[in-house]
Image (cartoon, rainbow, N blue to C red):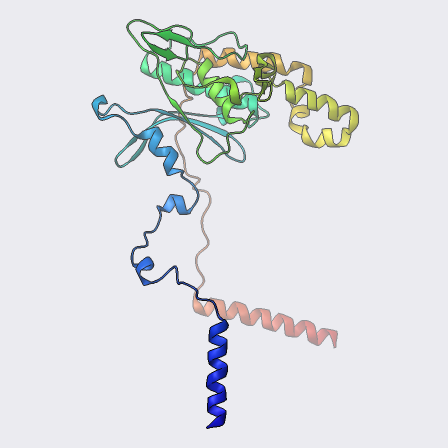
Length: 321
């Protein structure tokens, strides 16, 4: 009896020392828990951003909001003009940096300059498709400046606004990419804007903008568009570490592209894109019928194959002995 009383007092003392902890995730919490969207769980879609890019005023009578979608893979830049419907997105026009070899650019298909070329290509291709390529030619002299014009109480990001046909407006869709100053996404944006699209933007995220001084150096941005940063790094590596230069710029060396010739190369690519932005004709797919799969082995054949391996192994051990 005394032992049980001591045990009781000991447990009471321990409970008195314990702090009261409220259960946060109780039964009521789990009964009301709602699973997030699949693409949110996968980290692929920012739905707060997407809602503001896609939601349209009801008095616009189902006229869609168009988006300039820019994505980077391990090997290429992809630019698309998309709009959303209730059952998913529709792609109005598309271009990738894998098409740039048609225009003479075979190396560096993922840098800032290639992103500019891809944005220019998708803009000219879209305007050609909707019949606005002659009305809005865009900025033919690349200088890195932001072009705006006020017309009828609204601001348009083109050189001039036609009285009959308004410019094609698209909003930049960056996805989950961080929008840091000098990011390659804004190279594609600048290319599309110079191509004649009306894309709301300013110079605060372009290369050459100083946030502390609040000044914008357009010449620095122009240098980045024409691959000046790549040429500078090529010259630096060639002098300091020739072995690393041979490794990093092997494709440039193979195609006999020098640092001094990059600006002329990109200028020529821009001219060719404006001359013919149409997509290349699709090639008919032909299956290779020469290849034939091996027939699946039967059970008896598999057993015989295993037995043959065992016999060969046993013969080797006998020879060794």
